[in-house]
Length: 560
Image (cartoon, rainbow, N blue to C red; front, side, top):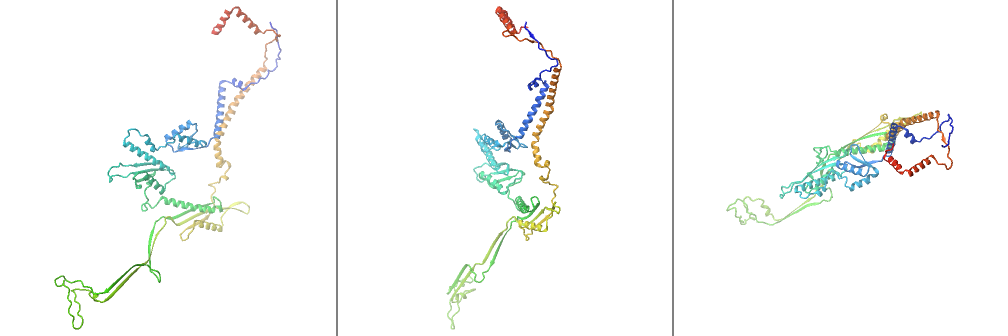
């Protein structure tokens, strides 16, 4: 027998304090508590991750817009394969990606031929099959030509979508029976955009130049409301033109801005309002005047034509005249000279002006025609001239100091109003003969309806509201995580700590019976384990078969 030494223990001695790690605390919890703590921890981590993501959200910009469903699906698939985050705008009209990757992604998608576009051009001809008929080839060519024209028209900044229809008749050998091709174009414009006459004419000539033997008059351009745009305006049928209205609005806006630019430095920004109305004359007139003025005095004159007629006084034979007959057809005979002078010359019956030929001498006539002084003046009046202009200007009260030193709005003096009125008149080019009118009024503006942002409280300013909206989600998630951590995890940990402290107090209060400790062994004395090992070795040497059976039984699980 080995000696056993007993160590006395004081009954009121408290146990030694032991340090418990967090792993032991977690291991001591039951299953429900572990699940609750895991859920709370997951929520906290998710809140922190979400707050980090919201705080570091990249700037998204438009990658492509106005895509067809086919192209949009192909682009989204490629973005997913490239691990590029994307999102859609409201309504799904555009695909947005981070701004730092937009150029790289566009180049990569372009190498893959994306976006292909909903309109097909001459690439249709590349997929021609063997044995295609002439009719199918002709239809494919027409489709390809329509697609190319549609792409060209959609290149305009104001055109959102376009559709081109071509009518290409079959040509035969009879020239008189050949029909000219025609085209129809349907345009869908962006909101707030419109095409002027030059742009419409450009579209018409684009279509007409792309199709052989097509006349510009055979091209019809319509907008999405069904209005014919390619028709030339007729002043008799449509006296009001949209281009004229736009010109009038632009002119009025320009003059209004001039008034604001000249008065705002004087009265301050936002203290003046102006409105200009211009009455324009878009009528077209042409007048021609012809003025004849005679040459006065020694004014030089130009000879238009000159004619000189000169006759020498010689007797010429007189042609026969009178009633046809045997007697009248014979010329008269000269009678014998009378006693007292020359005998008269006989002539045929009914002869006239015979005395002219018998007068001796010569005759000369000269006729000169001079150019008449004439002035032809053609006057064409320009369209869009200003017939009359009216302007109305309202100026706010200016701040002034009273005797007590307070700042109150004060009305303008008559001299100040006169000076401002003169400035406005000089700015718009006032013309009294034209009937222009300018009115300037001084009145106090109502400030209740529109308060300045600087006058609003801090919590009502737009910048503060926008900042609060941007940080609302991250701050909300962080607060939720803190509420869960302080409201759930902390009470559980406190309850667990109280329970452990109660157990320690119970152990300290109870009297613990400790077993007697074995006496320390002498140097060189074998331990009980060594003795048992020596006995097992001796049994194995003496009876190895029995030891083998015992081991076999242990291995096969047959031991009790």
